[in-house]
Length: 95
Image (cartoon, rainbow, N blue to C red; front, side, top):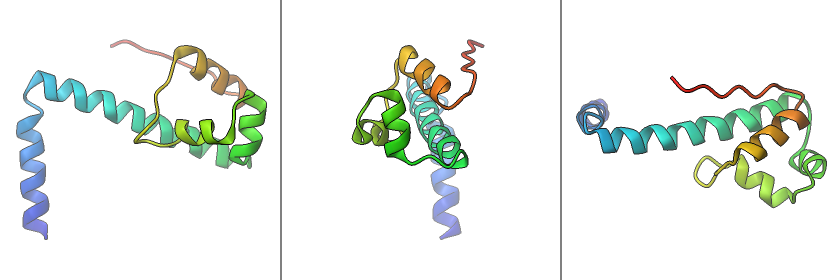
């Protein structure tokens, strides 16, 4: 099993040398990390998806999609609304 994992890591390291692959990977990684962060903050605040969705005036299903790393897509406006509803500041950086 360790050998397979090492091979996978080596392959990923090699694939990420391609700028197009790295760009796609970074984009998906950011969305996944953001989805997990939204769910974590919501849970830390003791809110259910239904409660936060009601505050945002969206359906619970829509919020569930925002918290799903495989389907989450965000607009800046959505992120601003989420930050306000969770009493957080939204910081966007370009490095």
